Image (cartoon, rainbow, N blue to C red):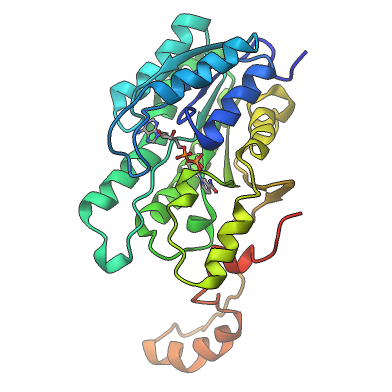
Length: 304
Ligand SMILES: NC(=O)c1ccc[n+]([C@@H]2O[C@H](COP(=O)([O-])OP(=O)(O)OC[C@H]3O[C@@H](n4cnc5c(N)ncnc54)[C@H](O)[C@@H]3O)[C@@H](O)[C@H]2O)c1
């Protein structure tokens, strides 16, 4: 018996990379899987059902259950069709994996409104759209699991990714709110920040030798390593796990902290701007976050 026997799982962006591996593993673990993928290029242009169909064919060839859905998660009606397809074909929906993604990396001063909107639409609005569509079913059956994909680009920081970082940190806020609002309906919501070699990572420009080296190391972090945590979070084995942010990188699993106050200072007569400069600044400066810190600085070591 697999850990997802009898469950129905919808995975967005499951034609390639991390999503494909999630769909394959969930099917091996016994779930019927809706394999959604628009099939556009890394910047989100175009559409092609071939990658999603390939995932479905591979699941079926291995004796699993799956169907293909080629909708865009950025389109509310398309997103709803992912959930409707699950219910129509397999009778229910137990877990939604919001994995679909694109990148339009541009240094901040060159980022257009179009670059901003396209990325927010697929990542943040896409998560909202698919989650919203599944919610009536989850409430009705008093159970359900959302697994959303975030990124250390949002949690920590990265160059040239204002659109992506904002979307990915927005997804953490969305997941947290869903977890709080839906707890009494027995519904859970968690985030994963993955590290995996995929075509999205291949678009990150290496601007110096250190970055080029890091990209070589990333090639050894294969996409299949992310799937077991997703299958666990989709299953009943994680019944009491909600509102958490995990990370996976090769054979490592991380639990991320949430922001908490790390210093406080009180002034009985209240603060003026000058008093802040004179008193708060020297007191807090030693605890300031490194203003130049990026994901690669925190995860600056080779995974085992
Ligand atoms: N690979 C990493 O190291 C890494 C790091 C941090 C976060 N992530 C996140 O993990 C997720 C998976 O990324 P990946 O690396 O496997 O990328 P990928 O490009 O290999 O796969 C993403 C898939 O999403 C699909 N997609 C894009 N827009 C869509 C839309 N509107 N509707 C439906 N499908 C759509 C694409 O066609 C593609 O097949 C993304 O959310 C990404 O932001 C990945």
